[in-house]
View (cartoon, rainbow, N blue to C red):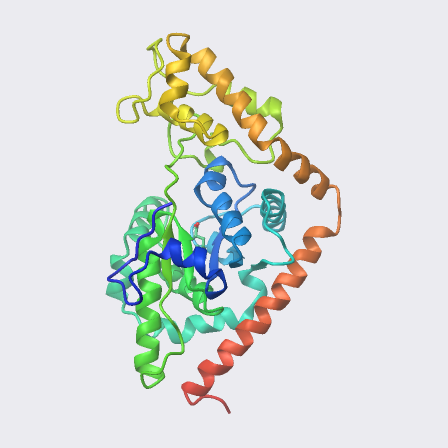
Length: 353
Ligand code: TRP
């Protein structure tokens, strides 16, 4: 785990990770996922395992299931409520404790969404247009159709996700850093512009995951829509079948060489993350036994590592009320907090009529 601030440190110089260890009660984590279907190994090692770790360290965790983000860039979103259910099951199976964490959906928290209106007044179109993630997504969609207003402004929406509950620690991947920078800018500008320089919103910090990015089994970015991802909830046979088809290369000797042999390296890394060993050790052990032995080893490692999670997930999925209950509680709690924040915002903006 490495920690990076998204800009010059404004607060104590003590590394963030150390502060979290010493004073978990000072932190509130807000992060989340787009509900596009079940979460996969990339989500797990990229962020989910880290959220569980933070929760166990005593940090309060808020997880937004960002249903309004799914409609930014897709023509058909599929069965959203089924996707939301899968994500909640993945969270719980991975160890998120709903008694301590707050799990909620965008669309169920009106006051959070209303914060987007004053926030939009604080950023320029040019600033939004410079956001590299928005730019990349715009390029990807442009071929098919124009960019929606919601896609263009979703980083502002994401700022509302973080600021409504005064989240101050945001564990994200590198691609999300520009959004966090914008959140910090909005917090600063809100305080200056509407709150006479008093601190209504504090600037959150990013907590960057050190976990390297895993490739999909076809060697491209891991993504559910490309059918190249091992879902946490997949069974052992499906996991084996996906890995058997995984792309490798024609060299018989297994070596850990992420630059020249990315597919083999990603498989080694997957096994390493699952077993706690180093990818180089695993490559040495495999030696010249080739891709078939590598895939068998990875399959065993993944299935072994996920066995307890999958067992829990099956039990949870058999309970017809648990997801409903977790979302009812999480949404109610998020609404209470969002209502309070919006009330403060109204007051400082002289709009409390
Ligand atoms: N955009 C994030 C993703 O695609 C999900 C997300 C929504 C998020 N709101 C957030 C992440 C707020 C961090 C903070 O993964």
